Length: 115
Image (cartoon, rainbow, N blue to C red; front, side):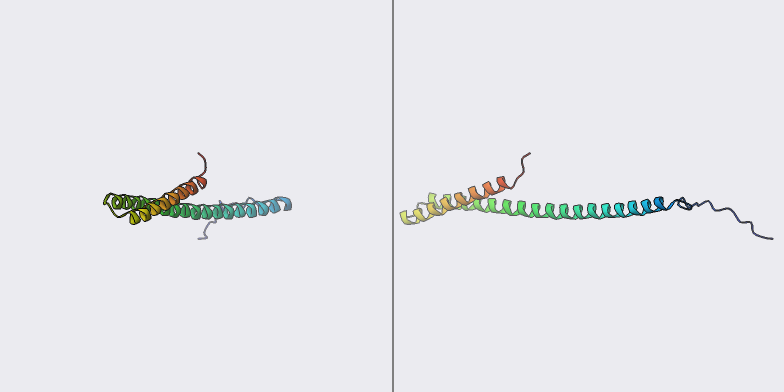
């Protein structure tokens, strides 16, 4: 018995298409591939920017915590009743830390986009 051949259900829609249609198909394929590459590159850049922003945020939080802790330690030293020369050094350190905290806060504000 001979096997019967079933007709193929898969048809090539491009068979017999004019040359301009085939060329247009090829150009669209290239354009879509480029679009995917661009979108992938944008995603990569955004992921890197988000990671850098998180690192900056963590560093800023750590710096602010350190400044707060140092300011408290300075206040505790002042309250302990130390000699005037040491108090002057403590005050100078306190002033420097306050100035650095203000600079850090200004830098954070300058680097933060408006809502």
